[in-house]
Length: 406
Image (cartoon, rainbow, N blue to C red; front, side, top):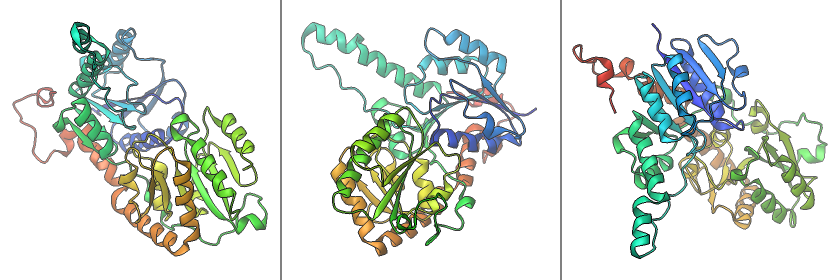
């Protein structure tokens, strides 16, 4: 009988975490029975069309402590061997969801943390009896206990970067032995030809625009990506130079607001929004450098894809960005929320073509060395299906369920 793996993502917008999940589920589909139980928007049916052993379910669950009984009953009906919570937001599921998964009969419960958690809240500093009661029974204490239960109830928590893992272990007391890092990977066969230098654009822009250096930003148009900071940095550059264009690829709730800001800053002639694009490879291949201005990340797939194509990257110093972009070697890392620093870093790479090329080559080498999707998939197989990848055979006397305890 095939192992049934139930993936439970929550995806209000399509982005790197959703692309990661599609590739991960596909890697298991040939030999395992996979269920993707999503809410509230279907980003997955098209990605799994024609793939064997993948069932896609839209069953609104909105997991909270009041609806946990219904979630538990649904899991029992699905009869999972493995339950995988895919978390694009750190606090999207309460600890009771993990307990429900454990009580559903699943032999393994895994959590994948795609975004770095907020710093742990500071203890209440109020003195006296009132302060003591708040420290013992207040919101922070309850919150930290809930977070701690999450780390203990799952068999393994996977952080997509060391930054994600370290925050959970150091600030939220996740068990060291049950919290690990698996870097997000990309299918490097899509990037085997590298960046296409001196290609002609095919999007209808005039020949003068073809001569300008091309900046690319692949990101959801959501608050955490801080595209507003990127626009402000481009406005600073536009005061002294016009030898560039910027293409922003992605959709999201801030699209209208950001387009209005672009017009207000006088950037309409050099900044273009494409909306959501299913395949970004052609855009990356024609770019000269990539930029990401987020104020929170896990490990962005868009950066890995850009590097695999040989692009240097300018990124903010958040989450796992430094684990992808090595400052001064594969790109430049700047302070988050600073349009001036971002503008200076972009301008530096635009002005220094040889350094831009050398960083791009180093970025490509690093992507192939560290972020190959095949390596990522093998690591996930050891976590989700350890009985098939353990170097030691399971004890024939002790039942498998007992050997995979908390």
